[in-house]
Amino acid sequence: MEESHVIQVNYWKELHKELNQTIGKLRGLVLLTHNSVELEDVIDFLNKVRREEFLTLLYVSLINTYGYINDTLEKHPLHSKRVFVVDCVSRYISSDLRDTHKCIYRDPPRNLDEMKNLILEGIEFAKPDMIVVDSLSQFVNFSMPKDEDLRELYRFLSSLRDEVMGITLDTVILLYDDKLGVMKKLPTLFVDTILKLEVIRESPRWQE
Image 1 (tube, rainbow, N blue to C red):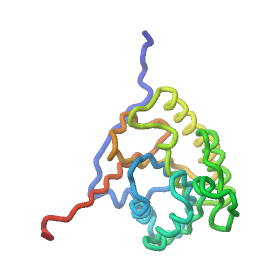
Image 2: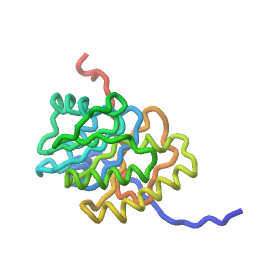
Image 3: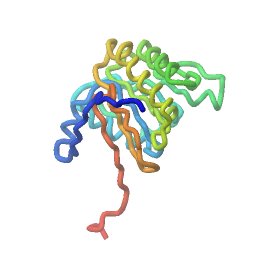
């Protein structure tokens, strides 16, 4: 039996009153891991980030097409942020797509190495202040993760530190929800900030 060693100790704190202040100062690479978060909820989160600054945002989408993202942004604008998209969905629908000054179309990455290369290409394309990857759940089932998948994830996060963070960013943020299943393994190594996104939609009783 292998002897285990402590490699990291994490302390957790729930944020309520300090939450807006915490989100408002975030910067870096936002990694989304979710099954059910709607795009407008992600936009609402991003609108709380550094709202007094004008930022260039790179959105790497493995879930939604650029057309859907653009339509959603028209209804729910991202204030003081210029958005560039890497669309990894639309080529499923049509191969006759041309890159524009706001969006580049790419085949979906088959693994985390290709995901990293896609992020590097996106940095060259947009020169962003912040990057959002939507979502890592395409590569790892966080409700029932395999050891091999977690090892690949940590290798990916470590390589991001070495190759991506030195270019334009300094923080890795994990934003997750567990609406459709508890995340049994939070990838805490090589991640600076972990936030749980919980969206509750119901009619307040005081309005009844």
